[in-house]
Image (cartoon, rainbow, N blue to C red; front, side, top):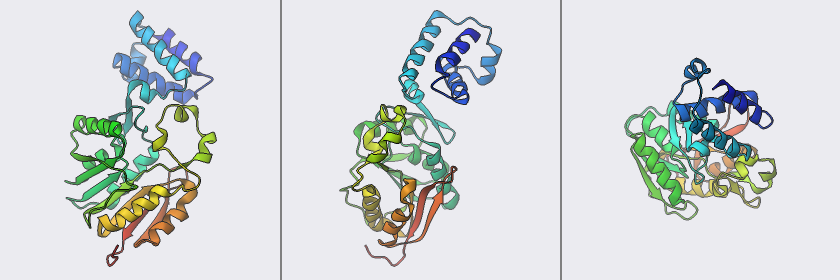
Length: 284
């Protein structure tokens, strides 16, 4: 096995950092051999079967084409659990874990009614269903394929989430139904594509990533208008945002019946989240 580990490091050294390579090694042997990090060390002198060696070569070939390892093994880690992911769903990011943490720290009541808009793999909805006390969680997405992945994830993780196919740009909101609405919608402007890595551009779903430069806040505007009707008085909205548009997103909320608006930085010091409360006397 030690020879194969050296091969992995040599093959990937020009495309990945040393820490990324070590993480990839853990994932490969975790999936192919069910080994922990300790197992990898303990079995480093073992001879691998030809089958495993072939599988490792296949993984390396795909990695060199910049395919994310999460798609190679159809798994990603989020909030301490494992999610199924496919090219129909985004790979959940650490920043989105931060968004879940913000929500769970601010909301301790039981039986909250929550809506996750643009659920993708179901990461946010499932995390909240597992973390909050007895919530009722709904989740919508426009993609039938993404919804099926999200349903599979909820079932495997025993999370109770109601999944609904809908296009938030034209959906009709219910009246004062939700305590919390959360969304991590598409927010990368088309002009920012050139700065994206190949593993994102070639493999992740563009409809879940990009918005036109002419209207980069289209989803935030639509979700804000939806939330203005669908949230209960004093209900909370939580956005993950493009760091370029914190003030603009806050302004949309302010103009549509929201107060207590906060723009919050992520772990990298970038404006990444906007939170607000629906004014108790606002009539949408």
